[in-house]
Image (cartoon, rainbow, N blue to C red; front, side, top):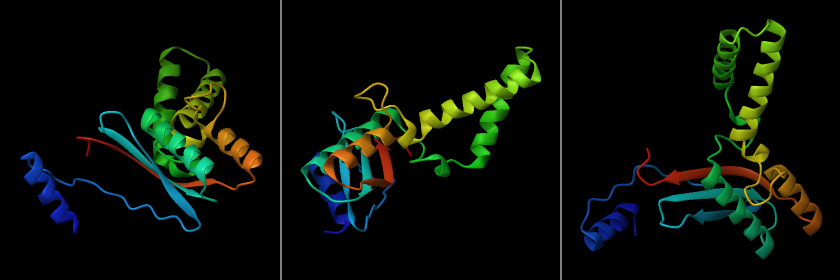
Length: 165
């Protein structure tokens, strides 16, 4: 069935107008796609991972997809965040420091520390794993790869929320 036919079928069953507002195709050569749908089916994530698919790697992929749903990262790593976004963040942090009458050198240190924190909050690989305090997603994958003689790597991700555009 086509996407339109599927949507029409759903509309017929539920009796409500249904629209496809956004979609993303994730294809991973020499890898796999894992998913997580949150309870209630209003949040979900897909993650594309390079590496060998087996039961354990699929379980790890689902755990990382759950992380994406819970923590809503903007990108996989720092390269996915534009310099424009970082410059804007720096400007905000600097303005706050100046308003607090911080000396220039201290203000610069504060800005640098807050930018680092921004990366840790918004880059998937730098985020603290929701199921294990003190461990980043990057650490989780490295530990998994070492233990399982695998070479998993996150190559793509998407998070969808019902009603969001």
